Amino acid sequence: MRHLTLLLLPALLSKALLGQHSGFGIKGGPVMSDTRSGNLTANWLPGATAGGYFALRAGPRLEIQPALLVTALGAAYALPDGGRSSVRTLYAQVPVSAKAFIGNVVNIQAGFTMGRLLLAQQNGPEGSANVTDSYNHWDYGVHLGLGADLVSGCDIGLRYYSGLRPILANDATFFPRNRALMATLGYRMMRVKAPRMV
Image (cartoon, helix red, strand yellow):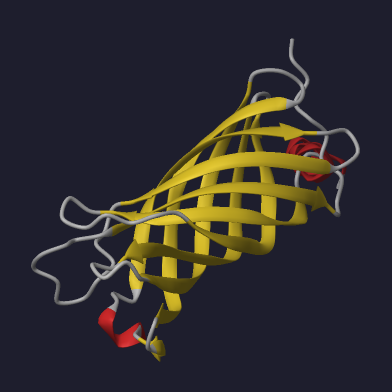
């Protein structure tokens, strides 16, 4: 029994240490988004994002953070007659970020985001219309950002998302891709110690 305990002790200790640096949190914040297209000019449109995340310590200066977010994106367009039109889209997003700490608080973030379209609605002078069927149901792209993880358990982040897949279905002309700037405020309900620099 003693030998079994000694054999399992390193695994138990590593699990305990990992648990001290890992935890679940919630976050949300404002979003400014539009679409990139060589043949179509779009303007920024305000939105929002909210959801939960899991922080997993992967090293003394590295953290892996998958999340599940509901994010409102979209873009505004100027019409030839001087009017204005917009399309608002709602996605369930799963971003996976690698966070490299350059201090005890500040970190640089980079990762990949996969999104599932929940709703697309077009708004114009003639009213609103559901255009979900005109959009590809899946979106994916990359994101880069900066963050700060505070001792209080709060974390602040600023992230830029660039979609890699055209969002319109059966499109042979415009090929628009999502892009967004997101600012988030989060709170880790299970405290996570910031990596200590050596």
